[in-house]
Length: 73
Image (tube, rainbow, N blue to C red; front, side, top):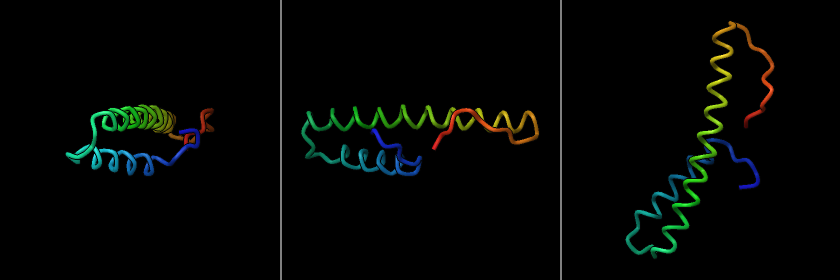
């Protein structure tokens, strides 16, 4: 996950992972790999949403939009 995907891309990838894991024919080793990949995506999404939330809080608190130090895709 070197290249930053959009949040929508991450959610779509998570949906694909869940669909694949729901398939009864997935080998247990593959399921663990999918789980690990999914958890990394969840962590990335959580971090990015937390940053966006902080931006919204800052805008709401001040009533004005200020330059934010962390640029989140």
